[in-house]
Image (cartoon, rainbow over all chains, first blue to last red):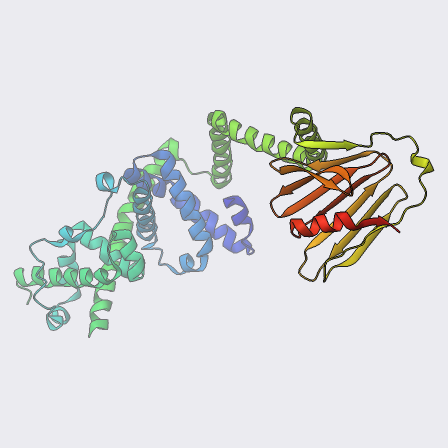
Amino acid sequence: MLFLMLMAIESEDDQAFLIDLYNEYCQLMCDKAESIVHNKQDAEDIVQDMLAYMIANLQKFRKINCCTLPFYLVMCIKRRCINHLKQREVQKKHIVGSMDHTSFSFEYSDPAKPVDEQVLLQLRFEQVQEAFTFLPEKIKDVLRYKYLLELSDREIAEILGIKKNSVREYLTRARKAVCKICEEKGYV
Amino acid sequence: MSNKIDELFRKVILEDAKEQSKLLEEQKKALNRNPIYTADPLRIENLMEEKLEKKDRFSWNFGFIRMPRRASFTVAAVVLILLAVFIPLTSTAARAQISELIVSITSRFTNYTLFDPEGWYDTPHMKYRPGYVPEGYTLVEDFDSGGIIDLYYENAEGQYFNVGITVEGGTVQVDTENAEIEPIIIQGVEGTILTKQDRTHIIWTTNERIFEVVGTINRDEIIKIAESLQNE
């Protein structure tokens, strides 16, 4: 099936690009997928699905900066792994990056307090970058889905298993967390 | 302002992605050094083949589950074809057999047989007609085969009565199942009157003929018609 899909790519240049991309990162994607789903066969299936996605979105992959491409692919794989685990109904045991309301109840979150946008804008890029590293991995993933994979709120909601309207709230909380970290570090 | 913050976070995330990608590149190199993951220009084709083989193995491993399903589909298809071919034959045969069975094991169908068939062929041509026809009824069918006369009368409401005279063939079957059966004298001879649901049937015989009048009109009218039957 996938081989036929490859054959469906008219341009030889596109075919070559995709085969190179796949050969280059297949092992990495399989490795990451296996580390999440803990099943080699499932991991390979997920990578095969990823290949189908790459074929369907070839031009999009062509535009991705090669410096961020590996992480982009890994995040895509991660997203598929989470969906896969959800489908297997074992996400409560193994899911990585799963989100629920309790995930955000860390000390930096204060829903009552609005985001001080002025504070964020006063921060230097390096300071926000540093604050970002202190965020929990789960929060980082939400921001990555939003800004790296450029997923819609609905798609993020599906991954996180939350309502679409809650995605915006979660992003707000992530920003508040960054503000809080920067305040604590004395950047503002 | 929100767009600026979005842009700020996007920049942070992209930078994070670069850092992560560097780490991943290192991991990728380590994986590539592992002979298990050695890159192969034909790997994609190999993966396709492995995928196909895996599917074959799956089919083999679970063949014992799939076989009954396949077999059942095959059997179902064969049965459907056979039914399509033989249903007309079997149903006709089955109906005939059932009919014969009912007749043979029950006495609910009564045969009226001409007692003395001799002289059939000497019978002059007959033209029997009821002298009395209830108002509104008209003759809609007049069947005369020479040996059987069948007159069919009907009114505007769809009610009917039928006069039959048999001179050849000798046998008339009357449905007597669950019918109310009484003897009756018609035209001076002993006959039988049967009532079943809305239908009344009078039958009587002479040495030469079997007469019957049957219809959905009321009993008295049927009797009146039977009494009036005459050869013109």
